[in-house]
Amino acid sequence: MKLAIAGATGLVGTKMMEVVERRNIPFDELTLFSSKKSAGQAITFKGRDYEVQELTEARAAEHYDYVLMSAGGSTSLKFSPIFEAAGAVVIDNSSAFRMQEDIDLVVPEVNKPKLDRTIIANPNCSTIQSVVPLKPLAETFGLTRVAYTTYQAVSGSGLAGLNDLREGAKGEAPTNYPHPIHNNVLPHIDVFQEDGYTKEEVKMIDETKKILNLPDLRVTATCVRVPVEDSHSVAINVTLARPATAEQVREALSQQQGVVLIDDVQNNEYPLAINATGRDEVFVGRIREDESLDNTFHIWCTADNLLKGAALNAVQILEALLKERGEVS
Image (cartoon, rainbow, N blue to C red; front, side, top):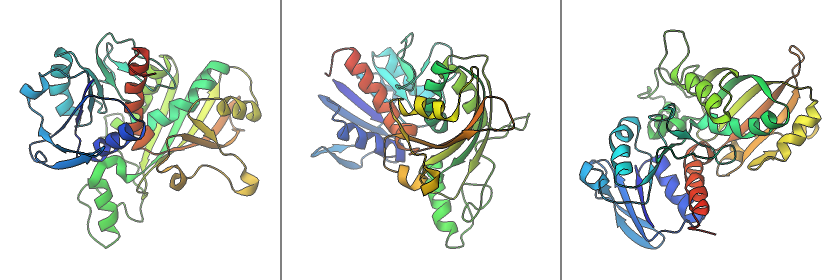
């Protein structure tokens, strides 16, 4: 199997390589791509040295079986169709293709690709960790409404976000965010739209409906950047279609693949971003009834945004395809 990783020197690309190694994804040939600026770097992977190649149209037109793409939206729009035309399955981490009707948007614990096209989109990081616990609730009780409030780590903005937080602690002015993120909270992720929502919030709203295949589901979101390096947290307020108790919600969540329930508030046990970092699972807790709305519940959800929110989910998609095609056991 010929595997390529585009954006291999970035935060998510580096994580993709770590996950490929940790999950023992088999390949015969590996090619690492980056921008011209980063090309030529030497990366040691699984005991072998690889020279990072510049991603060009000619190189993308060569044959690869699978491509893990984490090189940004504009780069993906240009190169993913070239990889696809040359016979590759492209798993793209950007937002470039997510809402195209003929492109699958996949979280392996929730849905499977139909492969009308061989470009598969990796969802937004906060959406991924949210739909994993929403899936069993949709199946067991049905959903009528979801309201998200996110608490997103600066690593979601890449190295630039991390630098703003770290340098801000030294008194330096931000270069990535419009305001300091150190000792601050920014109710602003991505670009504001005319209706006052940001693109990040629109992504969560639209992607949730598509992944769960619930186009009429009422969804809203407020996305917030917090001064945490890694792991996003999401407060999910969900209204169910059929009656349930908090204990029944806990039971449904505890049975979901990829979910870890931590909900013992009497002993101060609940999901924490610091404990989710470096872990593959989605952690949920603080489950309780919302007394202001009928049949509505609060759920606190945390996950590593660079792993389950990005690199791990992409590699899990690859892993599922390899198993379905009999290429791994």
